[in-house]
Image (cartoon, rainbow, N blue to C red; front, side, top):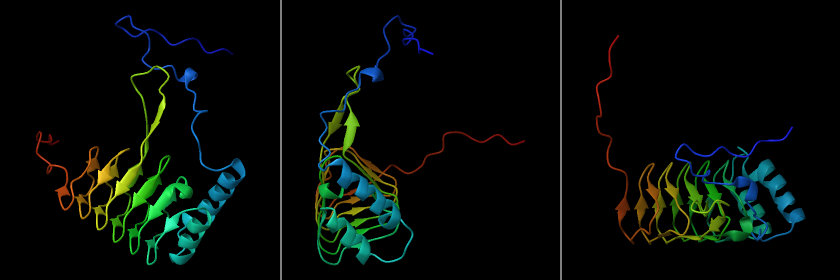
Length: 195
């Protein structure tokens, strides 16, 4: 069965993206397929597990090329795309369910806290091209910064030393050293009807 071509949009233009033309072959993964497959197995079995303890996670990440300083704590169920593109300074904490989606290098300074469920994303796509080309940019988090729970850091962002990205906030631009960033508080938009 063949799939028909995309329908034109209502304004008569063609569909914005042609994902059948997407070509990711120029992306350099950083290691061969065997090493990446071994990493995926080790990650699923041990790093992403709910087993208590941090030392064995640090050792496994170092074994696969991560540069990790002394005193680093890595909690259970952390997800890391490519450990060979990760650097963590001394005495930093990586909380439960943190996702470090490091298609590009991620550098986390010393004495940083990346709290539960935070997402560090180094990859995106060029939505202005119909081929939806992959774009990767590194992330740097300065010494003493705190990325609070459920917050996100976008590709290419530099978080200054001592900066705080508040609960659930998203950093799409650089954060200045020693400054606190967050979302506006919730505001009432309407009254809920009663039955």
